[in-house]
Structure formats: structure tokens, C-alpha cells
Amino acid sequence: MKKISVYLLAIALISFTGCDVQSQNKIGSILKQIPTNGNPTALEISAGLKQALEIGTSQGADQLSAKDGFLGNLAVKILFPPEAQQVERTLRSLGFNSLADNVILSINRAAEDAAKEAKPIFISAIKQMTITDATNILLGNKDAATSYFKRVTTAQLLQKFEPVITASLNKVGATKYWGDAATAYNKIPLVKPVNTNLSNYVAQKAIDGMFYQVAQEELKIRENIGARSTSLLQKVFGYADSKR
Image: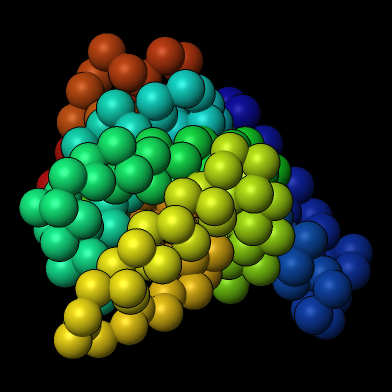
């Protein structure tokens, strides 16, 4: 009965308002709410996916912003920049292990500090999703949401992260440790001096870590039925399962 009533309402709208663009948009909004064979409506798909992504990105940001969120996770732990790995090897071979360890500790602490800034950026991106975005992500690849976030948030995250990273690097002593390491290395005869933009490097690695964690949360809710904590999530992702 409810389904029939909604159809009748749509027909009534056509009769009374004609077929201009505004009327078509109104009718489209109504029709999106009509369930088909027990499947979720387009609006439910949108709401369910957004709910899942808000849960996932919030948990991901919280995990990485905690102490050892980066340092204690080998998948996202930030090491010396690739062009400076020879610096680390050389310093350790000369007995400067504590200096190299301090660099790694401090840059990971800076990334953990910056991760707090990620949550509102992800939430804003989720709110801006269209129904089409949501449907494509739900029925897309297992990393479709992560790919969406990379596309729409990377530039904003980098802009937000860099000043935070710079401040954090100074706060936790990373700038000093890195300067000490580079100075010690550059004093070694015949080596090529190293000159790395540490803030940019750590910011980019922190963002890579955020996307990795978001991908893990996305995979969890797609594959782990127990992670679907609401009836809406169960309905929407159950529907996605049936389409695979």
C-alpha cells in the first residue's frame, strides 16, 4: 500500500505541476524513496554508505592519532625518506643509533599529532557525496570509498597537514634531530649532502597512512558482517553483497 501511495503521489505531482525541470526533480526525489523488491532505496543506500564511512574514517583517524598510532603500526610507520636511507645506514654504522632512532620516533609523533586534523576533512567529503557517488562506491571495488577520498581530499589534507606537521616536528624535536643527523652525515668525507623537505615528506606519508587505515576500515565493513552495527548498514551492505 505504501509503495502504491507513493507512486500515486508522484503521478499527482505530474498532473498538478507539469513537466518542468523543477517538477521532475521533485518527482525524482519521491521515486528515489520507493523500495524495490525489499531492496534499499537510493536514499537508504546514500545514508547507509555515509554512516559506514563516518564510522570507518573516525575510527581510522582515532587509531592513528593515538600514541604509537603510526610508530607502532608497521604498515604505516614512517621511516627515513628514501633519499636519506643511506644517511641512516651510515649513521648506524658509525654508532649514531640513538640519533637515528630519535629521528624516526619524532617524525612518527608528528604524524600522530597531525592525524587529529583528518577527521573533519573526511566528514566534510562524506557530506558532499551525491546519491550517485554513494551508489557507485557501494557497488564498486573494495577500495572504492578510499579511491573517492584520495580524489577529493588529498589536496585539502596536504594543505591542512603541512603546517600542523611543521609545528609538530618542532614541538617533538624532529627538526633538531633531523638537522643533527643531516649535519653529522654531511661531515663524512666524500658523501653527497642530503637536503630533504622533512615537513612535506612527513605530511605526505601521514596522508598515505590515513588512506591505508581508511582502506582497512572500508574492507572491514564490506567483508565483516559483525562490523555492520546498525540495521541500515545491514540492509545496505547486505544488498551490496547480493550484487557481487
